[in-house]
Length: 95
Image (cartoon, rainbow, N blue to C red; front, side, top):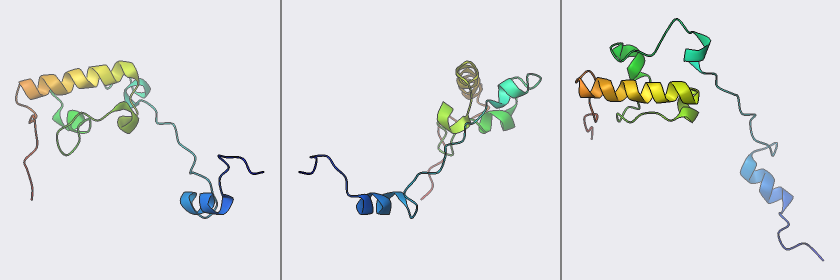
């Protein structure tokens, strides 16, 4: 008797791709840990803009690859830059 939650291998392969497996996840490394001479600075607009999305939201750790310590510092820098009007709180709406 087949198990209740048994999956169909053909159907499973079709969902996952031709080979039936996912691509291996690559570990992102924190760019601020790798280069301690490049601290997070709210005045460096180019650096802070890389930490926000095109809509103006702060990117999560899984997208930036930052460690927890530097993600907190990055969020603080983005918020401070917004407060000083170096960055917009929201982006312009495009149709």
